[in-house]
Image 1 (cartoon, rainbow, N blue to C red):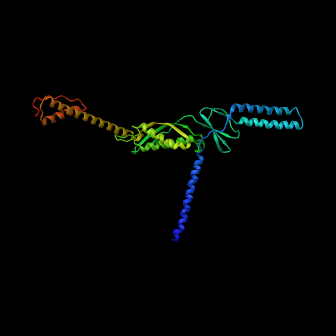
Image 2 (image 1 turned 90 degrees about the vertical axis):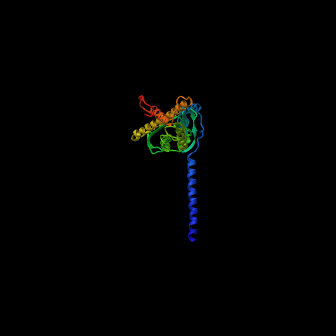
Image 3 (image 1 turned 180 degrees about the vertical axis):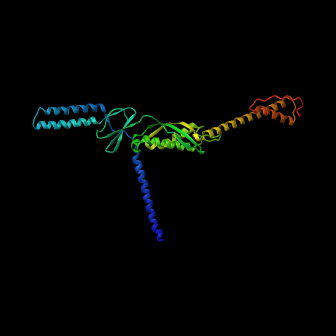
Length: 324
């Protein structure tokens, strides 16, 4: 009883600590994944004109100080220097935003918004402006060797079309979003390749070779979930290479050829049996000849040999009866 009373408070304390750690981790993750918002900015052309005017005024004041002496000259120099510094500071806030590129505005380490509107814009000159490309990109994964669902080694590669959707997530949620997409693409391709067989072999199941559209849709869905925290949008995925590994390629080719031969034989036999049935039925319906069971068996045997043989048959003239 004393031991039970001793351990119960410890278990409660451990549970509280664990809950606190999980809550802290969730808060940290939610803090890192701040959503994108528009930054405050002004039209850059007007601020450019204002900055140039201020710089010219500052230079003029310093030049004017040369015509005076004493305290007046000193005051004009200081005033001109302050005005000139203010004009340069105004010019430092100018930011040229080209189409297909956004600028993440950061002030003293804090995210202050994103500028997506192209053209010359003006923001707080004390901020850092980090360019993030929002153009559509093509990225082809490396050729990977993976075991499919049946355990056969295959070689597979895919191309991914993606675009940055949330610049804040792309900048702050991951270290390098381009490298992150590369790693997650290879991971998703490996997982999809190992989840399905290369060939369904007549089974009613998805396979990498026979259901390319469904496989690429599943790859896009999985990759979207993986790169979502980085603010990346997956537009399209396609498999660019899919084949057996060289060490088993010849064996699997022979297996495919054998399966094709078996399938062709099955169709030939199926058709031959149908033709024999039709011939017997026509002979019976039109009373061409009356055959007993032994003659029917001989006729069926001869027809099947003729129809199913790979080589041309030779005619044999029987000069006796059917029983000789």
